Image (cartoon, rainbow, N blue to C red; front, side, top):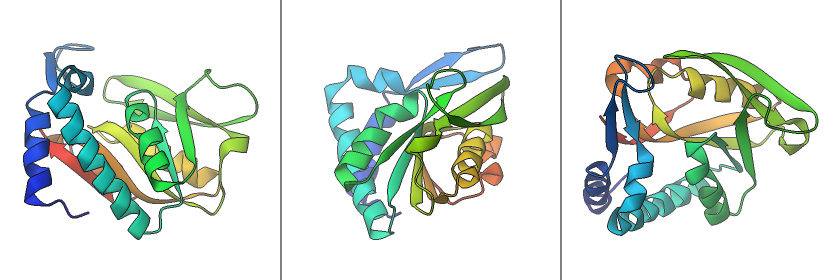
Length: 183
């Protein structure tokens, strides 16, 4: 995905508004918090403009649906899907969805968890863009890709707002990954 210098400058401003919390949720973890960006209207406008560019790029590559990971991915996924005119599929943590579900278990950098989707919300054969706020060790994004593929979808690409490249999470993700900011 190409990002012009104008968008790089906007992202640099957004990056300065990302909060950092040492030793959260456990000692040794430096938590990057996208929610702090929403305290600054200029940062929100900049990020929104970049996301519109990303949705246009995804349309050009034939993406047919957007899935996003709970909970911070929900800040971006529905808007991308709306901008693209495609369906949105939420990927939720275990035990939060009614009806028939499909699930996968995965490991986090600080524990284990489960992702689920409602069986009737999936779109077999569709090309998906998966969205999340952060790529760290890659476990949750890998699980999301596996979940979409488990139900017959194709993961075309993954979009993350922030990436921690030193953790090499990208190497675990079985689809192309584009990150807007690296820390």
